[in-house]
Length: 432
Ligand SMILES: NC(=O)c1ccc[n+]([C@@H]2O[C@H](COP(=O)([O-])OP(=O)(O)OC[C@H]3O[C@@H](n4cnc5c(N)ncnc54)[C@H](O)[C@@H]3O)[C@@H](O)[C@H]2O)c1
Ligand SMILES: N[C@@H](CCO)C(=O)O
Figure 1 (cartoon, rainbow, N blue to C red):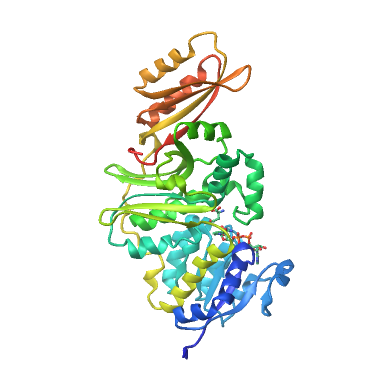
Figure 2 (tube, rainbow, N blue to C red):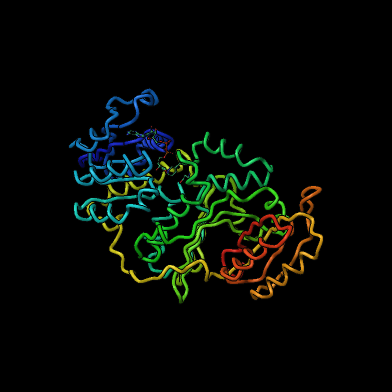
């Protein structure tokens, strides 16, 4: 029988994740109470008035400060998103002695250091499992299950919307815009979908994971970020013919020079586990020095998968309310790890050169440029005809330094008849 005082929560934001949290809390309340060891009661909900009739609940408000100053509330759940009202709500809630659960990766990646420092001073917990990879408990796995390991590398499909778009482009060759619209309707995409498409959302998630994995401060401004807006179905078709799939990855690899932190589309052999993670699913592969490789996959966005992570944090805070370090950020112990410049990374490339029909030997000019920059070609695929006037030349390189590749591409683009080019890095590690 539960005799302890119940924990009272205030939810702010009643969109995709807010509704999911409300519904799962209601549906699974017995199991949740059993696991938390205390009753968890929703004390108040803050939402825009137009959404009030979406749920059957009495104590509703449209003013965030009603929750901030509600003395009955122990834990606030921030599900508004962005960094304006949400940040104000979180900071004021902490100042008022409330624990915080949030799914807001944007806010944690950009303002996490200040938030955690304030939370430490006030003796409250800020938990954010739902901020990375939706329903996959990856923060807890890194913090708890893998805590004994030195992490060598970590790679992930970290955005459900992008994976959904790339999968649909691969399976149906549908237009990018139509697929994005569907992802928005299904509640996967961010309110500002540019965050998804340009890879910024993945950078937010990668920086959070890297901070925990390597005990370093959140280095959002030092990440290399590329989205998927340059990829067209031609690239997906050519990749397929060559035995690869294109996935959008967040990558962090530590070596003796420092840490690579990069976000970009990557061509991965079809036989690799991660290239078979499709649709809205996310996946993370982590290499620890002791454990070896661990692979996690599951639904990375959406209402109830994300609610699953939110409620797991609620239960953790309720049960570990006095063991703050378990879920708050610790002091960073590794302050001197250098984030490496992209110029120094070494990888293989797929390069598609778009040109008008040349009257000279364009290929030998391209080889010359590669030669000067010490780039060897693994294979060259014939000129695919796009139209009566245009051709695609597909080249796969061996491993090369990014700086040399960039110099070569700049020079190739200056050649007569070359219109432009698109490149995609191949493999997330040198041997893939
Ligand atoms: N949708 C997902 O799959 C998903 C997954 C993981 C994390 N997240 C994150 O969770 C957060 C919420 O995402 P979402 O998809 O539920 O967004 P959403 O846009 O569906 O919901 C946000 C809600 O907040 C409300 N809101 C805005 N200002 C408010 C205010 N001042 N007071 C009360 N309510 C206010 C909006 O009306 C809206 O209903 C974001 O940080 C997002 O990045 C979303
Ligand atoms: N827009 C995000 C939501 C989950 O973080 C995604 O598609 O992955």
